[in-house]
Image (cartoon, rainbow, N blue to C red; front, side, top):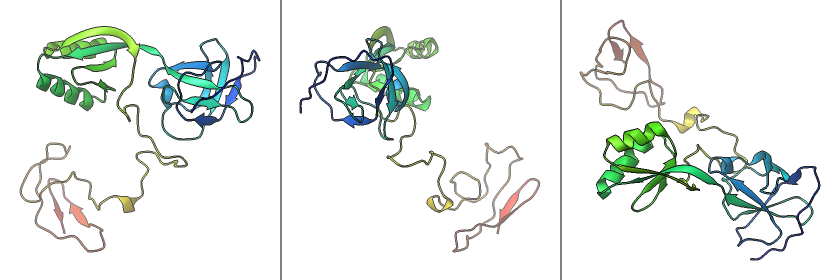
Length: 223
C-alpha cells in the first residue's frame, strides 16, 4: 500500500498524532521521526522530527512502534514515518556457537536487551558488560547502528485497553501458595529463608485451595 503526504508543515504548534497506519516503504513528503529502541516503546509524549518539527504522540495503547510505520493526525494529510535511530552498541562474537549461546544466557539473566543474530549479539554499549564478556573470552567491538532488540526486552506489554501491570493479577489466576517456592515436602533445609533451618511434616491441603499452617521459632508444620 502506498501513501501520499502533503509538504512539510511549518506550523510551530505540535502536530498531534493519534493514528497508526500500516508499514510502508519511505513516503515522499512525510516527516521523519527517528527513535531509539527504548523510545519506540513510548506511545505518548512530545517528540521532534528530524527537521525539528514538534510532534505530540497520543497513540492508542498497544505494541511498540516499528520502523517504517506511519503516524497520522485525526484530520489532515501530514504523515510521520518512524525510523530506527542509530545507537551506540556492542557487537559480541565468539569462536564457538556454544560460547555465544552461553553469553546470551548470562546476558538474559541480567535482563540485558539484546538483538540476536546467528553469529553475533548486539546490545547497548556498557563498559561493565563489555568487560564481563571479554573476561569470558568473547570478542567485543563498539559500533553505531540501529538497534532491534528481541520483543519484550523493555518490559511487559499489554494488549490495548488493559491497565493491569505485570504484578497486578487476581489471586484466582495464581496457584494456592503458603509463601514458599515450589518444592518437595519432607525433611530439608531452605537456604533462602532468614529464619533458622526448619522442616515440614507431611500434610495435605484442603480442597478449597486454602492452606492453613502454623509457624514456630525454628520450624513450621503444615497442618
